[in-house]
Length: 374
Picture 1 (cartoon, rainbow, N blue to C red):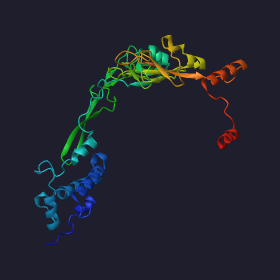
Picture 2 (tube, one colour):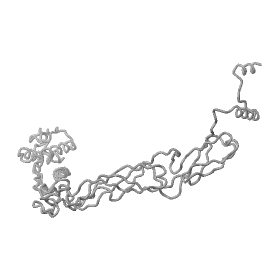
Picture 3 (cartoon, rainbow, N blue to C red):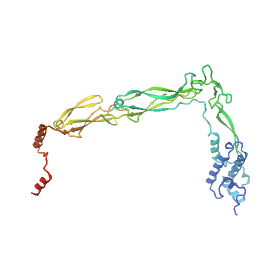
Picture 4 (spheres, rainbow, N blue to C red):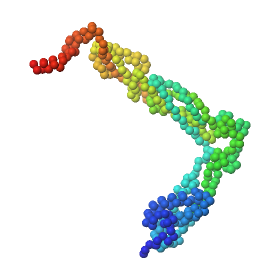
């Protein structure tokens, strides 16, 4: 039997072709339902009527059995247009859940005048490597919102007090009715008159202009523990902005930046430094003084120390932030080779070279070539 060509215009109402898939029909219906919903078009009877027609069309085309009957006979029987809470089915599935969420705020709301924690704040703090090693107390400047001392946070001028909002009775919320294809629903929204606070202030505080809070610049002490490194974040409890409606204040987060040091290079908990010795000291061995975080420490270098050799001083590095103990100090030895020698010093070096059988003035290229040819 041939199909009937959209006798009631249901496909045209949903703006889809007759061969559209169920998913395409559902997607188009979502869009049209939001567009023509009465709450989105207050006082527009044409939009309300179109919304009803779109729902009637989806009640048929959204049901595969009713759609098949409609396509063949031009009617869906008693089911055509039979949407609603007493139709025996839920042809809209989760569609109206989305619509209710859009126009009714997605279900239950938190009380607008409930206590709320204040905002957290963040600041940066630079310290030296030695301060990071020993631990230090620093102060940081923070501008934050605090409870107004003049009104005690009420927002009302001294000698007065806030009054209960007559519209919401102090609840901060009012009920609103919304019309839907299923009938009239009641939803709860913040009171517009008191902005959800439940209170009315007739004489605002001159200091905070009725807000109950004002911006204040504070110097806050930060205790930096030993062993911190760049990237460590410290939290100061209740160091953030004041809460609302009696809620607790937020926290202050301090981001640390450890500056570089002229004597040390840091590698985790270990430190690296350099010790420069003369050529005779490297050859014969000597005792060097190494600068540590705790002061100078003497170390014996063996004879024959070469440039690039290292030695380690245990426990002379950075304190471990967690776990206790300290890292090591690794000392890199460099040999200072003098550029300007006196004649006597030069002769002594030449004698040493001769004694060691080390040529210090090799012959030129032509002399070496003659020797090779002969």
